Image 1: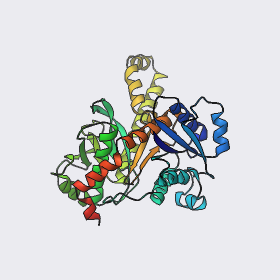
Image 2: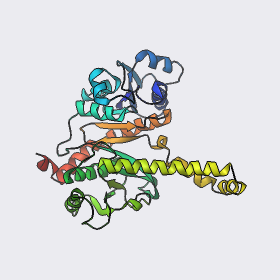
Image 3: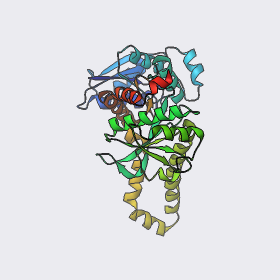
Image 4: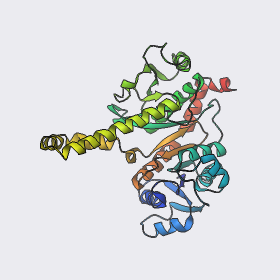
Length: 345
C-alpha cells in the first residue's frame, strides 16, 4: 500500500475540500493510505459528516498553516510545525512515500527543499504542469502535454534545462505512459542557433542523447501538441501557463456575453455545445489533479490552490502512481545516462 502525506490545511477551499477528497479516495478499490496533516479537531468534524474507510485515513496533528498571502520563508520560520512542513517530515522519516499540498506554492517548494535532498546531478527544482493540446498523447489518448519549469526556478543554465528535459521525460513515461516521449526546448525559432545562450547550449547537449529530443518549438506549437514535453526556464514557463489559462477564460466569457445579447449567437453556441464542453473539460485543473515538483529525492505533487475534493483525490492518485512507477529511480537512471552527476560534482 502506498502512503501519501496530504497537507490538509493550505488550499483556498480549506480543510473541507482536502478531507473530502481523501475520504472519497478511501472508498475506492485502490491501495492508497492517506495521512491527513493539519488541525485534528477541524478534520475530525469534517470526517464526521462523510463516509470513509478508517483503515485508509490517519489524522496527524500540525500547528497552523501557510496562508496564500504569507511570505513563505517567513511563514515557515515562524511556524516550524505548520501543516506543509509536518507533512514533508513524514516523508522525510519514511512514514509516507509522497507529499501532496494544495497550499501556498512557494511554501511547498521551500518545505521540500528543507526536508528533501536534491537528486544527484540535478541542481535546480522544476515545477511542471499539463496543458491542453489539439493532438492526443500516449496510449490513453491524453489531450495534455507537459511543460516545465513553470515557476520554481526563474534563471537557469544549460545543464538545468537538460535536467528539466530528463525529469519531464521520466514523468511523462510514468504518469502518461508514453514510451519515449517527444521532448523539445521552447525558443523563438526552431533552428538550433535560436534562443538564449543557455537554450543553444542545452540543444547541443541534448542532441544524440538518450532522450527522444526533437529540437526547438515555438510558442505557436504549444497548443498544437506536437511534442509531449516542453522545456523552458521558470520565468517563461509561468508566463506561458498564465497566458493559456487566460485565453481559455476569456473565450468562455466572450461566449457567455455574446449568448446573452444575440439570438444568432445562442443558436451558434448551441450547435457548438459539445465543443465548448470539451474546452471546459480540457482546461479544468480538477481533471489532472496537480503539478509535480521535480528534482528532489521524494515525490512531491502540488495541487491547484482552488482544488475541489475531486482534484485532491486525483492529486493523491497521481502521487501514488509516481511512487509505483519508480519516478525517482527513472530520473536517477536518466541523470547517469546523461552524466549530469559528474557535471554537477
